[in-house]
Length: 363
Image 1 (cartoon, rainbow, N blue to C red):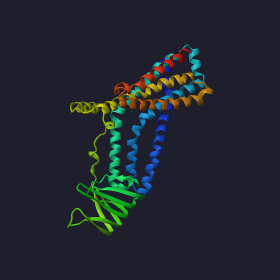
Image 2: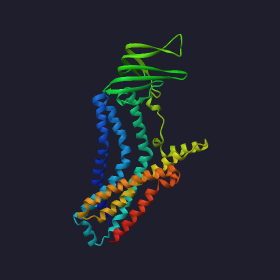
Image 3: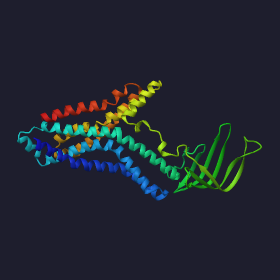
Image 4: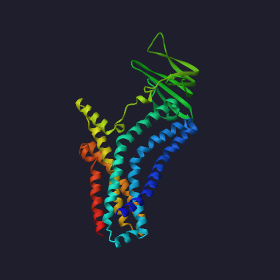
């Protein structure tokens, strides 16, 4: 039985790795295309963008690893069915039920790996991703300046740009609100960002426009000044990416528990922290759930049912994560506690998969 167990487990390794790599690559593709535009049109360093992609990969594993478990299970048992190896096992007196424990143990091991990823790796990579984005924004503000939106990263200024072409900005409006007076406005037809050598922050060069300047005789009034070139030194409120604070999704389990205790002492609502903590732990057991469903699909699979089986796989994957989103909404409504709501999809799926698996084995 040991030889047979190792053989069946080995049959799952290749499809698991291929599916995991393929799904991760597909999810990365959209980001690669977007990042490619930043390199070509806006001069962002390829090295900086490669770091972004590397930091993005761990967070994708929380989706691709469970899906790879399900697909690998179906592909492996499909091959065993096609080559009549499952029939040969039954003819040799080996019940399909004896194949279940090693597969369940494998799913549990993968779930424990995902627990570690959710606790340590994914939070750290998400924080590193945000810091890298901030670093790129400091070096190349135009890279992430979107036309038609207000940019508030350089207080006290609010920047609005109608059009961005590469590193050049067109039709620029800059507003400087005053606490006890009118808002100062700067208008320019064109502009571009430049780094300030040896210093943090950036320099914004504006061309062909006008600026409000304070009237010395009446500090609450402005007068218009036309300019051909106007230079502004801008400093972000968070020039140092390393000073970015952690969001809840970027905290480890221990940090979330400490944060919850600290908020409770300060008599502050701890609900969001509890929801994030239970979401991270519960979602890590998706590989085990999908392994149970994969066993059921694989043992039932017939040649003529392959297409329908993959439709069921897609429906299961979408349904599981939609259920997670729905239970998150239920918790936000206050109808269930986070400890209950985040575990409902797992518990319900485990019961359904176990019942179906028992029925499959009996057949």
